[in-house]
Image 1 (cartoon, rainbow, N blue to C red):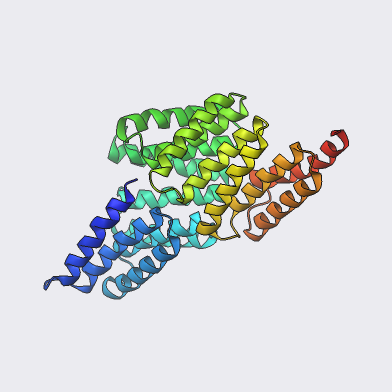
Image 2: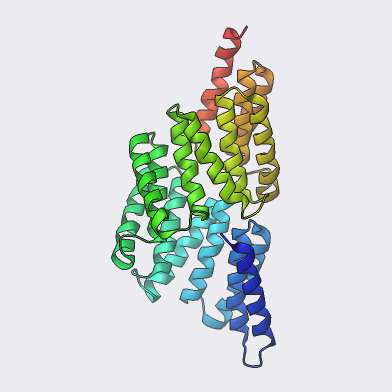
Length: 340
């Protein structure tokens, strides 16, 4: 998570390479790829895309279209597209990358496995949960064969298996994977690693559903603290703020909840623009606050806006964020008749 320091080192390396008499276009291009990767970790997706697409074009010219280095750059571009919820293009790039990787570096290479893991995440976005679980299972077995039983890459796979079961509303199984993930993180990651924040968030969401709100709040605060070390306005900070907003909503602290949602919205719009499913999630969160405050017209407006965003982003109708928002919108009518 020390992305600013990483950028300083890569920028210095790029300057040295550019000024070297023994350098070539490919050396500069490959270093630019490293810079582009740090840009997207910092949340500067537009800059990252520009740098990586330029590098990929040069790599294709110099190395040809079927080189493993080209595939790795395609993989990074696919991650950006998935984060920004351009899932079709992300999956297309990943399938092309895996095809190249299997024919050049083979299955038992970390780069190939990383691409296959990213495909599993895209399947999850498409709400193809069972297929995602199978893909993650295959990835996990290959990872264990080449990396051993404890490695940061295994942490990420376990994390997403947990998310799959959480999406299937199997909280017991989901928590089992998240706790296994966290135990491994304590051994192979630093406690301020961004992946720890992700796991804390998921554990907190399950605890919140189970009514263990104070433990959930602590997990969300830990997540927020870790993410703010990257940057106050980093896009992942918005995820933690949103979850804290859910906690405040459950505790009927509506002013605090709305402040969290407002801060999350400001950060997210800067990172993603207005058309992103997470923007819809925030509107739905505000809608739930309005419902609890008996502000039914405002609630209906927020839920309707959320559903429009989900539809525009082509979120599957079966996706939990869509079905929950539809149920919340219907519930407003019932709450309106009961609220005095």
